[in-house]
Image 1 (cartoon, helix red, strand yellow):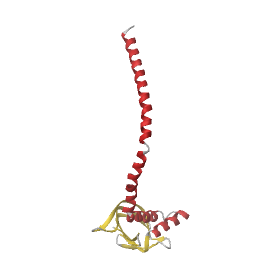
Image 2 (image 1 turned 60 degrees about the horizontal axis):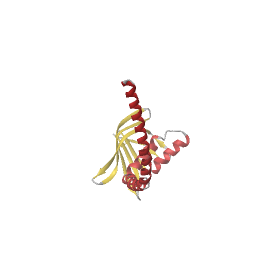
Image 3 (image 1 turned 180 degrees about the horizontal axis):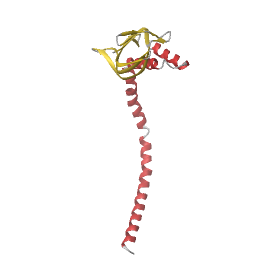
Image 4 (image 1 turned 90 degrees about the vertical axis):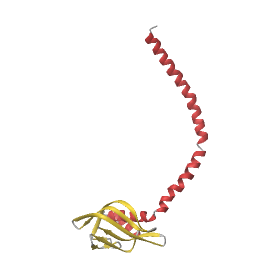
Length: 174
């Protein structure tokens, strides 16, 4: 036998031995995993549930503002989608919402499904606070259309809590 043949046989034998050694370890591993599996799911959801529930409870003002803004963004859609968007905006707003864009008062009639301005998009939502009290949210960038004119800038969404529910009271765009 040549060295090359002997070396090839040695490589094949060692690969076969390693393959056989892995199989028993694989067989033992599922058994070990099966034993550990019942304890792990019980521990993980218990640890993860409070963390998952906490953000929703910790920022209801942000959730209400986002629902209002998304609704306002989609009000230009035709038919049922547009009606649902107006309803989402109205549900998360106070009886009357004032809107100012670049210092001009804009009509926003949520009940009548009318507005002189259309919210196109918004970005980067942050909580607006006065000390520890939440006053609303700020938006880093907002794009609006007022008739044929486009306007963009920073915005403030003023909010207040009434009976445990956050409602939008004003939208001001610089």
